[in-house]
Length: 153
Image: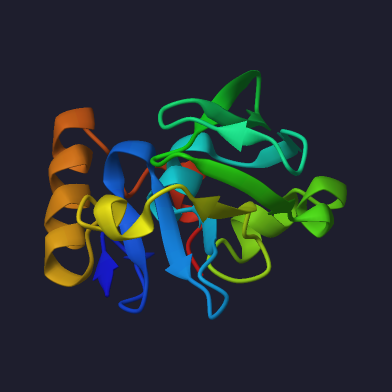
């Protein structure tokens, strides 16, 4: 699925308010990463500093810090759980987030506290696209801005 030239794979769940995607793994853990829209908003990412593996992360609390251009932002978790692993390759090479946000550029893996209950709060397919479209509209997102074009495949 595409929106303003940005990819949103259909096989993922999304937390548009956090600009994150989630993937359910075979071991019942969740992989989280920055969506293409999140990448477009941040621009070139220079660093990702995750919290310590094994730490419990509460919903709306930071699981790490993303540094970009002349600023930094807390990456907030859309659900509570234990941080199982951080993507060490992204810590070493943060440009992977911009290059492959849905693949090699994933950020962290979590074990959710109550995934069946939390899952209903995440969007997929057309619902996710509509939510991102509304966020883009409200933010005055310009898909033709030079920094955004650089992130498009």
